[in-house]
Length: 170
Image 1 (tube, rainbow, N blue to C red):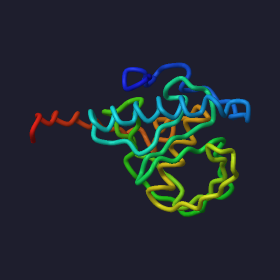
Image 2: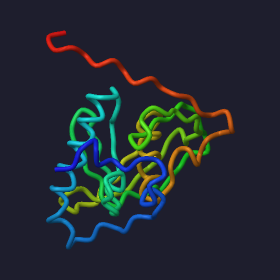
Image 3: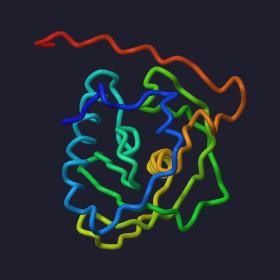
Image 4: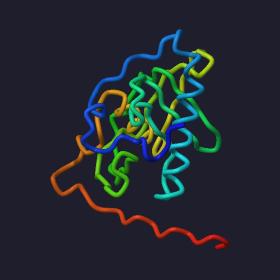
């Protein structure tokens, strides 16, 4: 099983490649991919205290797959935006491929996403604010785009300190 140590780090050439669509023939592999993505996300959460979504290429799986774990796990195959609002907002973005770096970016306030679920059923999802930002970040990964490439200017970077480990029993 893959985990934190397998997350590709900033500078790895696969992070800059466009992913291939998931095909129906790939569906038997999806549960194993999702298990690896889930494990990596859990380990990032434990070590760095963040992580709501992860894109498959961050583990070197060069398929258009995003895994979210908000209040429940969600698998998005071949996500594609069908709408992006003209209204935007700025925020400090983070990424599992460079967990101590924050990047100031501009994202669309609202988006509509079409995708297929893990059962190959077509779905559509309208998102606003934080969820819209999250899906824009994850879908960028599928196109080989990192948030550092969307920095609003040359001063849009800052370090985030690694949280102190929590001692057992606290």
